[in-house]
Image (cartoon, rainbow, N blue to C red; front, side, top):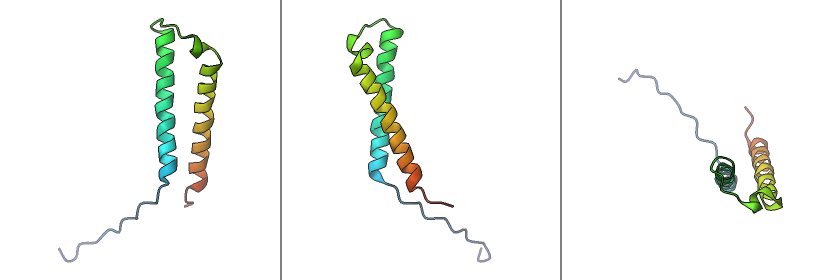
Length: 80
């Protein structure tokens, strides 16, 4: 077994906890938004606020935060 080759493993890249947390919060918000969509359009539970500007604001906050976090992760990624 002395002749066995040892494989060196790469050390994992450091991660930004804040970006991971923001991405997780964004995903939870997106799941809740889509659950509300299901309640409205699949189960017929009407929510006036969801159709109005609060729902639109929620939708856009998910969109823009997701894009911002994704671009931040891409910008801080190490190049190969």
